[in-house]
Image 1 (cartoon, rainbow, N blue to C red):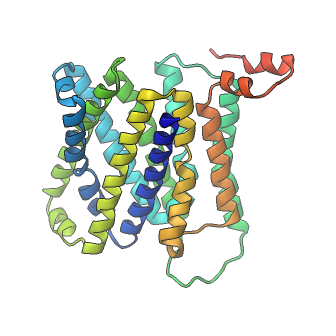
Image 2 (image 1 turned 30 degrees about the vertical axis):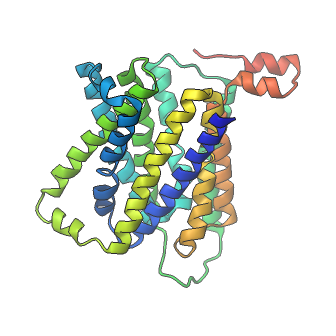
Length: 324
């Protein structure tokens, strides 16, 4: 029960993170957002390491683990987060959600290739739903009548979809890199690895800021946007911390599906904070719902479903099909 509650807290704070970041990029830039949300993770994860013994775990990592954790941080916190913020800025948090759910497909493909994962009928069903989500949303948006808005927000679909896919690649690749770096390590090792990842990404941010004009641009950030980006950085740290704690005391089959509710909280908080800067229609909700169900199908085990529902023997045999 506690594990599920922690996973739910993770989902809530992930949703709050996206809504806060969206509020910041409405008038702020992506670079300004990264300059705050990435470095802030270093002291926060250092504090978490202090209380969990993560600093001792750092001394036990091999050079290869340091390299993989660092690469994961750059891929996730620079490439993935940049794509996330750009997609949010172009389309809003709600519209970009189904495209970012495609990160699960990237992770699944990589797991099939490098981690000897298996493909099941349930996962195939999940893949279909994840692809249907964006398709339904975009089809509905094209058919919807144009309405006058009280604010000047027109989604940039082509640009937003591109950066949403970049986000999906970044967020989909990083878990594989973390698993390689961990090499079977536990929660404390994961937290220590998180510190390495944030530190490596922060080095890239420092490199960007020393480029001519970038530092002055970041210093020009308004106090209001600085508060929203800071809130986003804190929320995403809390989300990761709750996730690690949940995985330490509850099965993955419980934690991951509950955590996928983050896409629901993302829409809820976006509506609460940014309703004038979001496009939330029936087709958007339907697309998010389909991508959410697809994500659930990709993360829940077949045995878990079969244990809940009594099915004919033929269906059970089909459900147990595996590839390769």
